[in-house]
Amino acid sequence: VLPTMLGVWSLLLLWGLATPCQGLLEMVGTLARIDQDELGKAIQNSLIGGPILQNVLGTVTSVNQGLLGSTGLLGGGGLLGYGGVFGIVEELSGLKIEELTLPKVSLKLLPGFGVQLKLHSKVRLHGSGPLGGLLQLAAEVNVSSRVALGMNARGTPILILKRCSTLLGHISVLSGLLPPQLFGVVEQTLFKVLPELLCPMVDSVLRVVNELLGTVLGLVPLGALGSVEFTLATLPLTSNQYIELDINSIVKSAAGDIIDFPKPPKPIKVPRKENHTSQVTVPLYLFNTIFGLLQTNGALDIDITPELVPRNVPLTTTDLAAFVPEALAKLPPDQQLLLSLRVKEAPTVMLQNKKATVSIPANIHVLSYLPAGTPEALFELNGVMTLNAQLTPSAAKLHLSLSLERLSVKLASSFVHTFDASRLEEWLSSVVRVAYVPKLNVELDVGIPLPKVLNVNFASAVLEIIENAVVLTVAS
Ligand SMILES: *[C@@H]1O[C@H](CO)[C@@H](O)[C@H](O)[C@H]1NC(C)=O
Ligand SMILES: *[C@@H]1O[C@H](CO)[C@@H](O)[C@H](O)[C@H]1NC(C)=O
Image 1 (cartoon, protein in one colour):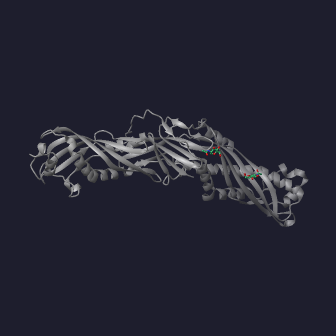
Image 2: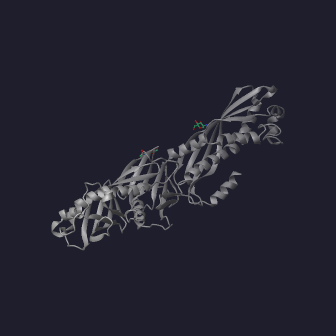
Image 3: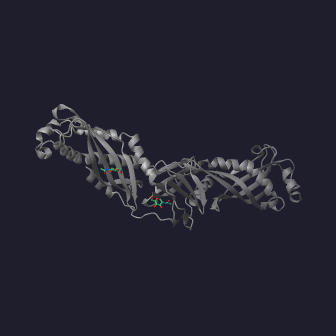
């Protein structure tokens, strides 16, 4: 059964024959480096949590009405004649594997190939021995397998069993009597039976782990804005300590259009990964794309009216005249102001000098109006807001919280007099802080999605802002 199944799978695969390299990387997407510890944990959990062990034993019971005897595996000739012990073998009929201890998992990554997986376990056998007495045996058994890491037709990382064997250790008699001439028969039998029994168990384990690996590929909704689709950009790579996945993030609008931005020309210098940690590197590109999506959705636009700001923030023509008396003194007094802020170009995110900043170009129309009246345009400003971004990881995303660092404006056009608009910067900054930044932070609730790999939780990750990327590191 096993070789044919492997053959079919191999057709779908291209092997990741390269190993990851440290240092400068031409990253297309989000880079996930998953420590071997996490793979070990996933494998161990699949054995603890699932029905795999139970199924193995189920197979034993249904297939073998006892390992020996006429209906057992050695029935119908074959080894029955072995050593002339026919009569005694008949007496041993009904010997069954009744327990398989939870295997201890040990694994070693094989650079450029995949994983060497070892399961260290024990089987207990139970039956009636010669003269009808109870016979209980225990044997140590190790499963040794070579598992390749590749990519399946859907584009998810996949582990495939390539080779599997079992090593039988010492057989001990726990109770009853096993005559020496039968010892060899039992050993031979186990030798023949165990690989057929335990190698499918490895396959079952890999099926569970592959499901976890498959979650890398997925559609992450970004509220009402659209979604991010994660796919593998290249074949998965294996080093001697970790698995590396270059994950493409395709950002789509709600209408399904791909939001594409020019990729940054400079490669990213990904820091070295320490042993027993997993790492995700989120490129600047993804930040810019998410902001691009917010901008094309109009989520960065706002109309600021006095209702949106506290009373102590001035927002009338009288206040305005006080800032620039020589140009604006002639405005009709005590009219309310409407600041219509529009972001017509995509913001620019900068990840530099351990800091994340966002620069949002904005077009601000200043209008005056009386309650129930029609707004009247006063002047138009072109501005740039520079905001500091505080980054916080959670299990599934990187949260951003912005605060205004500075705002600079220039007069673009005026229906009144021309004036030096920089004199309005302080006032506009206070308005933007109370009325605009909180709205931005609500919109940014979508966050920067992180790929899901083997359930590694990045909520407690240490975060580092490097040149053009953010690196999250979590201990395993
Ligand atoms: C099985 O594996 C364990 C742990 O690696 C080792 O100590 C033991 O000697 C192995 N036994 C056999 C029979 O290979
Ligand atoms: C990680 O572990 C490997 C093997 O155990 C060792 O050779 C290597 O030096 C370790 N790397 C670091 C950064 O500690």
